[in-house]
Length: 460
Image 1 (spheres, rainbow, N blue to C red):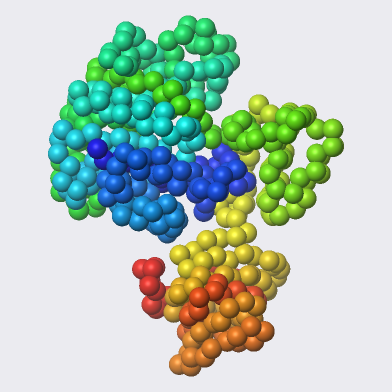
Image 2: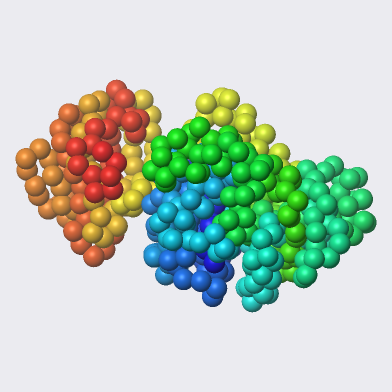
């Protein structure tokens, strides 16, 4: 079996924590592990890291590498989509990669999962996966479904028919319903939530693409380099629309473990531990006479008085407050902010880079101040800026700094000045994180005022 993990999405339903620069698959929500790391760990009892393919994009590659290393799966493969084209092209590309680079045979099962779900306990989940793989080995397209326990309007549904082995034949897929329709599905008893997980043999997938999505199949028939070169020509279509809703070979395997796709702040409230009043609290929170309320803080104290069925999410630059049950409308907030050109949609005040991170501490006309953290042994590119100068003050660790042709060591409480249009590089040669305060001055202070001459992370 080969595992395909889809980790390229930049979803914003968990705004303001989830943003384009750091989508939810990399978030740690009430757990020490990110959602991507949890996903990888769930499957390690079933296969080796070398049998895992993580599909993502170039903006997230360093996040993925960090997460794989953290969970002992550095041997997994990372496949970069040239452009975003929804799940059907992404899965087809991963299948082509498995065939071309990993020697996957037509009869081998491919299991596809999103990177951002919570599923517990692992032992029951593994039992469910083995059942799904057994069904897929019979040349079936297998989807995993969850028996609903409430009339949920935020999920798609699977209508099942008669039994097929340990699963069920699929009669139809249904879009996210309104409340009345969801209630009728719950009462009918043969409708399941669509988990977004699939299993099929490599040969079965290609046959179904040939029949139902020939434009994808034709491109996949080419060698892998050609597929990558022309990936942008793919239609933007989900695997549900391209194959599952049209195929006569679809069966559903029940997922009996607890499942949550973490698609809203209401879902986050459901999975977090509660106090005696039903409050889910994370961060520096003070609830007084509050009940059934989520308070999630990052950098400031949240004090709530007399709140009931309320969601409060705080970051250092955005606060979102909503009624429980209304958090799906966060996407409307993101749409409005994007139309206004607000940077908060895409960026946090703390941005992660392959060498470490930087946090914007303050800015105004003609200046910006950051805290920069460079991890041990890492380095920034050799670069210059045309429109700004920079002052660096070391507050932790030791820096090796190149300015023009000069190289020097800079220690705690020492500083250096980099004039505009001067090549420079910052290196952490030590064993501790290097922390500096950077003060920029100039007429243009955006991140695109950078010319790279040499970069160990391939960003030149």
